[in-house]
Length: 178
Image (tube, rainbow, N blue to C red):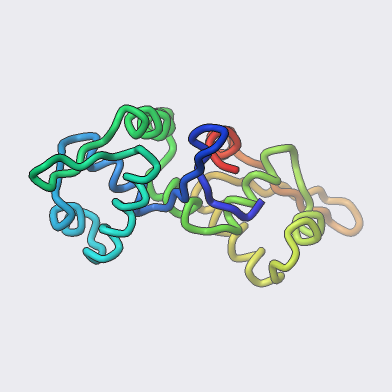
């Protein structure tokens, strides 16, 4: 469950991260050289070249003779599904944060199946620490992907649920990640 891999077909998987998603977003607009991508994303040229190599191996981008990178039809399909999430109200920041954190993705997938109590989440996500779980739940809540409900019983009971936006992102993650 901790994998951050995109499932492109039955045989091919691709490690999707915020940089790869950002590259697809940029290339969907126009073709670019690695240096242009690096400047636009604010990351090192080394990272961009590595991600472009992986994207090319996965068939999501191509490179022309002049050294410009273009998005392939498969890349357009994947980016189109990502863009639909944004059009439906998912913030780019929330999308990239969940992709870049193995715990937030796992937590979101767990709470999208119905409300989960804190102790259930921690037991299902071992070896996550209490501190990290609390931080990630708070961050997911601040991103609008998870909501916390308190039942005033004795002792009080706290459950976490995926919001509508969180449900939408969780469905996308289930469809495209393994």
